[in-house]
Image (cartoon, rainbow, N blue to C red; front, side, top):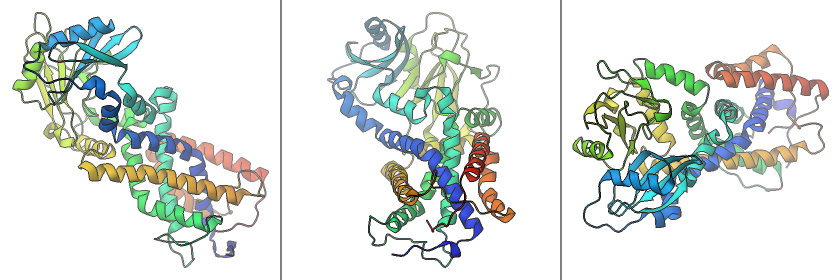
Length: 442
């Protein structure tokens, strides 16, 4: 099959192609990691059941013992302080108590019928580590900042990919796989194009809805959202929301993350009272009870939800059992509801198995795009200097075509914009080092 030359390629096309190349070079390795960990996390329940079935299963029998005995047994068994309790929705499942120790957090599996500690795992277990790796939090805050950069460039990849695919009277755009020789570049080009065509919208959605976890844009934008009428609901009268610090409740989701309420009751706090209140308030199991280290703070009960509209945070005085606050989905601002819905779809829980499979296909597509793009690049760069990047044609109209795609995203996501400036610097340097040479269509 003969290779078309540059005669049919406009300057704008060649410039967008060049930036599509650089965008892929910059972020595809990280996107592949995020796709792998995200795909695994879609099956969190199944993986944890396979890994910890021996720890989580108990014999259902009679009445359970006092919930206070669950935390007492876990604290004695692990040598630390209980910070949260996961109450399961099945009588044959163990209660999970997270304990803060000098060596770090551990989760104890406790038989609810006799308060026997069956065993424990580090932190939140394997899937907790997968989640932290997915957000790059496990590598430290500087790496978590990459979330915004990678997500922004992923959107640029999708936008420039659509531009390159769009039919222009050339035999390049394709909507279905065509027979070809895997040893030749056109085969991988078509595979790349078809995969991107059908998965591009899902990949862009994953990138946009992943932004709440970014360390810069996410913290700033979502903080403003929460404090405005579009985010967090109003706090109870005379008891404003307060930053919870180390007592941040678990399992609350994005809108109510990191805040709590004060409690003014007297006496000794008790998990018994909080669980009794949760049952009286019809909190569905499974749910998580967060135990504050400060006795002056409310305990928080949050059900484990699959749909965004089921979100709820119940604030209980651990010393009296009184309900201090009850934040529900209907009270969230419109912006918070949109983001909570986006996160639930991102995690594959909002619409059941269909949702999960679609998100999984997006993760698989990222790997297919990366592999096919890598093969195309490897075949193309043979005998070429440097990275083998497409040569940028001169002219202001060309720059306008590229900026029209990437500039709005650079403004919306500042770290993506800063990385764009760095990429422009690298691009200028490469252009100075290597002279242009004839190109072929991708």
